[in-house]
Image 1 (cartoon, helix red, strand yellow):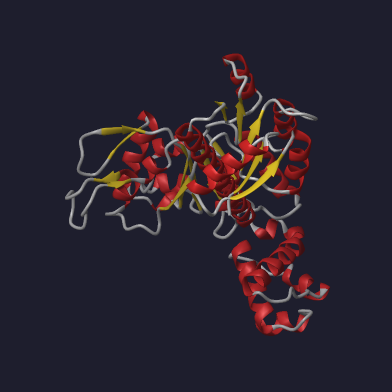
Image 2 (cartoon, rainbow, N blue to C red; image 1 turned 135 degrees about the vertical axis):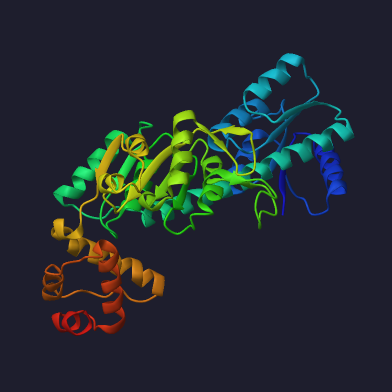
Length: 392
């Protein structure tokens, strides 16, 4: 229900304005106030979508009311009306926050047009605020998903490096074993960068067949190969002004490597099947679990691309090198998994944690999460040493 407040000291005019508005829309809910003081009390108690306000009134005039309300509810639209209007008064009201100004007696069409426009703007602002709130909630969820958990010295060193390099556009090569959290490092760099408002686009180079990787990265034109039924943007284009994260870069084909190198050198890409170049502004982060220097010796990775990608190299420590983080990680995973399952958060016995600290953790943090999930499902509450022995 749209709520409108009419503030006017003359009852006859209030009645006419109310009649005009109800003829426009029977569903309008309309309140009346005979002066600014009464209007202020009503506005404090109610949520109005629009105020139509006279300027010259006893006790508190319209301009004083406008100034007071704009401090408290700056998004509430005011349409000011006056029989003593001048251009100066109109301009002054607009400067103080009024949506519109109309002279008395008000032209019917002009008044209704102002009312529609004011309500449309109010609705648009409300929708934008909802979207903004939803985006903030979503971003918080995304940030939580990629949160780096732990207080170990090695993890602190990584976090300090991220703080130093995030605000630059330097390309970063993130290395480390499988499951150490290379993706988390990439997201942390992006979120702390000047590009955070734009997307981070991820490409798992190991998961895409070599014959399709170029299309995935650079896009393609309709008919350029079997199955290309329409034009498609590549990941470089989609990441424009943002960040491109090339995961498992060591598994990229040599032909694709050559084109990535050219894109980095020139800031341009060319879709498969096209001769036209497209300029892109992309920060590239890459990750690999391979020793790229060894791959270069074996002829499987281009040395010039390696040097382009590794302006900064970050090595993510293995879990066995940050054992002191295991209790914190376990506590974190207990909460996350319980939320996913909609179940009670279980506890870990200290002896159970001590046993887990002795594991090799070849799968690193990813393996630890899987073990915690398995123990939540199969173990008791609290999860004890025997549960770890029996189920791990």
